[in-house]
Image 1 (spheres, rainbow, N blue to C red):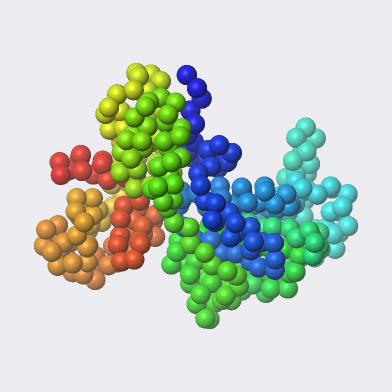
Image 2 (tube, rainbow, N blue to C red):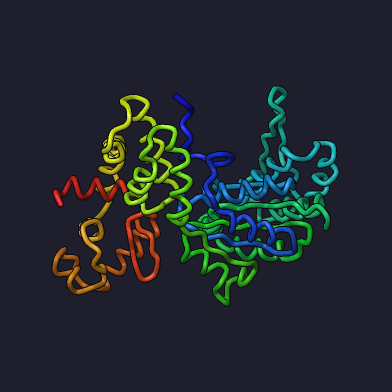
Length: 365
């Protein structure tokens, strides 16, 4: 049997990359000029894969950093410098580092060539980070701008109070860097870049990344599912009905359909079998998630899973006992911030279609 043509859980590229032609063109044009870009989408919508594909097509030097892994300002400076060592010769960097106000500890692994870098923690100011970012500016040029991608940028609030002010004060003077800020918390990212008293107010062009259209995703699935069935069109439609064209879960379900076909052969109900297999494989994860919720959270999610009624309506409250509208609204905000719900104004829906199935099954809805 051929190799499974679907991929999920990691950065997707090559034959696994789905559509996004319009976004590819638009974002590529942004980073060719002086513009900085802010890209918002829920988790697992493919924004990281999209940006990495665009950068690889541009053939430009770049630094990518997921802010979720950063634990302090010193760590942020160290991680950025570590990535600079990956793309520039050590000899070229030594002269710049000698001028740093705080000299880092740099240890090069003789086998891998990877740099382990650390700044002294607890310094009185944010000089190491400022020095590292300014070094990147000097390493770039007007014709060869360096791209810095900061993923889950809303985490700056967790890392250090006032980090947004420092970063803006440094970044606003840079001409040889294109900054790309990715974020999965729409409310927090919009607060950073659209609130008038925010240091980053209108710092770049803001885009939102939605789901891939069912028509385009359907064609992608049909072409690949032809390897296991002549019912590829119907199978792709059934997959998209379950996942509602969510990029991650569509790839996951299609991947599982392909694997089951390889083990047991194709059957008319293979998509349902695959969906139930995914739910079962994540039963413990869903149970832990469910047990982390309070009573109102559970009632709201049960109602959203079972009906299309607005959770802020009186009818929803009567049917599912969710209480006052203000309480439900707070719950919706909290579940959205956790990534359990996604808001597409004015509709809230559960991000994971297999979690929906788990709720319906467990509660006998």
